[in-house]
Length: 181
Image (cartoon, rainbow, N blue to C red; front, side, top):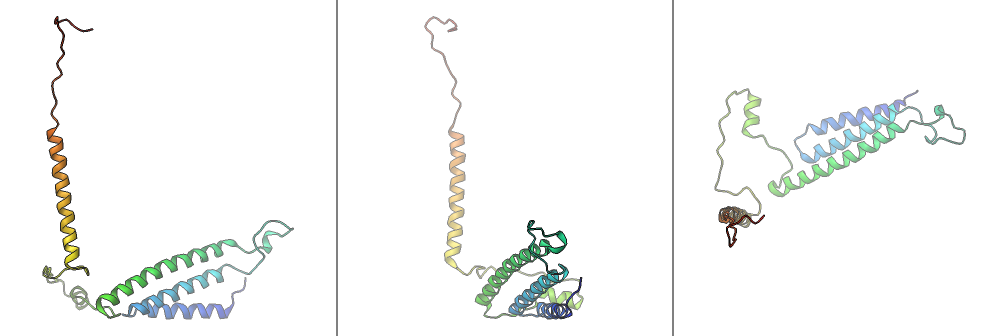
C-alpha cells in the first residue's frame, strides 16, 4: 500500500488550519475550523482505506484482492452526515449570537477570568430579576403565568372531583327480610 505524499501533506495542512481556527474567539472561524477538521478526517480515512480497486460487488470473476474495501467509504459517508448536522447546529448558534449581541466574538465572563488568574474563590453572581431573559418580553411572561394559572386550576378541579366521589352504602330492598339468593 502506497500513500500519496501530496494527500498526506494536504491532510496535515487542513488539520493545522482547522485546529488554529477552532482556537479563535470568533464563532464563524470556529465553524470554518470545524469544517476543515471534518474534511481532513475524511481525507485521513480515505488515505488509510488503501489502494483503489473495483467495486465490492461479488460476481463476474472478480477476486477479493481486486476489490476496494467498502468500510472506509461507509465511514466517510457517516462522517459527512455528522459534520453536516453539527455545522447546522453551529450555524444556528452563530445566528442566535449575532441576533442577540450583534457580535461574533465570545467574551470572557467573571468565572473565566478568575480561573485564568488562579483565583480560588469566585464572587457569587447575583441574578438580575429586573430584565426578562427572553426576547419576547412581557408577552412571554404573561403566557407563562397564564399557563401556570391554568395548571393550578386543573389541579384544583381534579382534587375537587376526587373529593366529591363518596362511597354510598348499598342497601337491598326485600319485602320479607329474606336472603335473595
